[in-house]
Every structure is written in C-alpha cells, then in structure tokens.
Length: 616
Image (cartoon, rainbow, N blue to C red):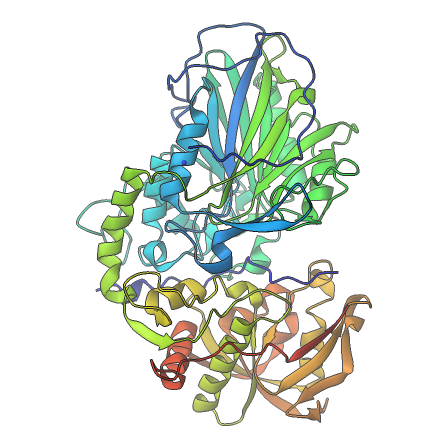
C-alpha cells in the first residue's frame, strides 16, 4: 500500500493581523465509448447566455432545437487559492506516454486556466463551468493574506457557474463563508484598497451542511442551470467527515450529513420539479492506481483502477444522478463506476491547484429531459503554460501582489536545493518537525520531540527564485505557502504508551485505509512495515528516541501544531495530552529556525529523510 501525504488539513485562523487557456491537447484515455445518436446531438456557435435562477454564466443561446443537445461541463476542484503558478512538484502533472514511459508537465496558474477554459468553451453553445470544492483555504499568501477575496474575484472572472463547498471553505467558519458568498468587508480587517468586496457571482452549494439550530442547509442545497429548454440540476456536498479535519471553531454550530443520503434526497426533489438531468458536486474523492493524469482507470474494467471513499459513494447514489464531479484527494481521474442499477456512470476529478480541468460532454434528450448516459464522454486536460496569459487575470494578480509585496518579499532563510514534501517521510516534513522541536525546547527544555501532520505541509520549498529575490532565498510568502494554517506550536505531556499509540493511529482507525504518516523530529526513529495491516504496520519494538526504546511508563514532552494537539486527523490520543503550553504561530517557529540556521553563504541542505524505515 503506498503511503502518501494527505493534503487536506484545516487551518485555525488566517494571518490577517500581519497585513498593516489555447485548449490543452492531451486528454485522458478513460472515457465511455459514445453510443450513436441522431445528428442533432451537436454543439456550435460562440454566443453566451446566462444560467437559470439568477446566477451563473451559462454559455450559448443555441440555434437549433433537435431532440438531442450536447451540453459541455467544464470542471475543476481544490484550487486552494493558487492564483499564481504553483511551484515545484505542486505545479507539475505526470503524463503517461504511448510507450509506457512518463514525463512531467508544468501546469497551473489562473492566467493560463482562464485562457484554457475560454478556448474550450468556443464552439459550444451550451457550456457550464462547475467546481468540486476547496476553492479557498490553505491558500498562498497572495490570496490567504486577504481572506481569499482575490480568489473569489478570479473565479468570478473565470465565469464559474456553481461549486460545492469543501472542508476548507469552513476554515474561518460559517460567517466568513457567508461573506465570501454574499460580499461585504471583513469584520476586523475592513475593506482592502478602499473597495467593498462584492462576493461570489456563483452559488456555493452545501446540501449536507445543516445549521444545528434550524436543521436547514447552511447554503443552497442545489442549483438549476437553464438554457433554451435545457435544464441541468447540480447538488453540492462536502465530505461527512469535515468536522474531523477542520478546527472545532470552524464548524461550530453545524452538522454534516451523509453524502449519499443527502444527494438522493435532493435528487428526488429535483425530479419532482421536472429536473431529470442531475450532476452531483462532491468534495470527496478516490485514489487512482496511477498518479498519471491520463491513466485509464477503467482498464481492465469500470472503476477497477480506483479505490477510496468515492467508490462506495458512487455505487450508492441514485441512478437519477448522471455524473459525479469530485475532489478532496487532489488526484486526477476520469472513471466510470457502476450505479446501484449496475450501469456505468462518469466520476471525475481534476487534481488540484488549477493544474487540470475536466471537459465532459452530457448529451441532453429534450424529449425525456434526461441525459443519455451511454453517450457521456469525459477527459482531463492539462492547464499548460505555453498559451497566452489572460490579461484580466494578470491585472488581478498584479493588484493584489502590490498589496502583499511588503510582507511577502521579506527573506526568512536560504536553501541549497529543493526541499520536497513528497514521500512517506519527506525532507520538508523533517525540517518543519525539527523547527518545532527547537522552538519547543526554547519554551520548555524538557521537550523531547515534535510531530507534524503531512497534510499541513502545502507546498515544497524550491531553490529557483519565484521572483526577484534570487535563487536559494526563502521568502515569507514562500514560507506562508508551505504553512498557511496559522496553527500555534503547542507542548503536551504523554506517557510512553500514549506516544506508541499515537504512532499506531497513523495506520489504524480512521487512518487505516489512507494512512497519515506523521513527520518526526530528529532523534525519533522506527520501522513502518507495509506488508502488515492496521496498527501492526508500526513495529513497536523498533521505536527509539535518541537510540533508546520508549518507556511506556515514562512521560514525554511533545511539540505539535494546535490542530494535531487537539486530536485532529484521527489522532485522538494526541488530544489526551496534559500540561499544555500554547506557543506562538507555527510559521513564526519555522521562520525563526530558517533564520537561525541558514545564511546566503551557509544555506540549509535538504534533510536525508531517513528517520522512518519503510518495509514494502
């Protein structure tokens, strides 16, 4: 079983106090074979119209009204405020070549995404653009510093029609999500550049997120796109487990319901309203057998090449739903998974950070009002950087960059090479854990070790300059992109038995199917045996601290971020620690470590990442 860093962790609060697409040509192989349809199932023209219910940008008026009408569905997910091209491995996708080899392609950046989407819409009279959640949250400084207002502005310019909420939409709580939807100045920061924020032009859907007091959905549960007699309904949900991966404050007063139960409920409601073509936007996903974006996950059979939560969800959602746009796992796939009736149904995800978009053709039958499911075609396309930048996006980035520059451009350290976050144990994970350990020792000399959640590491540190700072220089903006959650570094006491249990919780309980391997500070070593199952994958007798076995009856002082210290990510034992000391911001700890341990003439080298021995 491969163990990968899980990318979806919450943030406690934003750091606002510090503030004074030519279309891609390579597509996936995983698409349903099209059934023969009458010649009227076609698209054409460049006109633009507007979707139903007063929202959206439904593209095209349509000129002919034969029985069948192709509807283009463009979709993406997990943008996370990445307006500028993501750096390092976060800004690349892997592509399988005809001879079986792979190559990487630089991808992402809203200047290019806008160009690709606009080109893709050309020649399609009926075009909808939808997203699968996590448009904001865990964002780079350019967006995160301004409570993600820049990203909402960019999505408006991208003509996004509708999106589901994701877990990160709740990072700052329900009131802030409502502000992103409806507009208005931030309650504490006020208006930026003396201009009131107008909010999202598109609806956020949150069908399975209920207000505890009223029992009603926090936001709209569904939305219907209408164009010249064609009606397509969208139901939006986030994963039911959102409270487990978002701070308690972020989900205070909210209940999260089962995804399948909720979608089936609203599919019936849409059917009663005469809307028979339905797409579910689900912020939950799967794990394809290959990391290549163009992997055919229907080979050898439908859905055989994908695992994870989305498989069971897809198998149980009513056949009334015609396609699923998913997200959350940051993976790329175009798969068919059988519905409860045994018929194949398209399930897609476009990786993350705006590196891909999915182009799906839904053939609408005007006679029945439904989608001809056997004709659904879908493919992922790379947001390549070899196309012209969209000028309006360049202006938007320039406007916000000017406001962020005084903070973001400040150097905080130096590196001798890329420091990556990939792998079971990563060099960057070790570096951050060491930084928190050193910070903890400064607060309390009794501190023994530090633990860091892999999903809290949002981007690599790259040696190549991102701006004018020079190669090897780490700026505050780059550090913010790595750790944007504004957690604090907390110290807690645990028994040795509890510490062993924490390590076993990486691969058991809620983390058994998708392990979350903690990054560990220098001195802590152990063996992870992936040939075993459950908690046994952590070899107890191998656990050592500074060469000595863990004493189950002794007390160990552990540094971790406040999310982990609160028991987040399924590490319930970490929430049981005692004698807690709440420290400073985790990015401040990282900055202090880089500044103290690197210089232009003596940069930090990537750690060896040799603390966890992996047996496969």
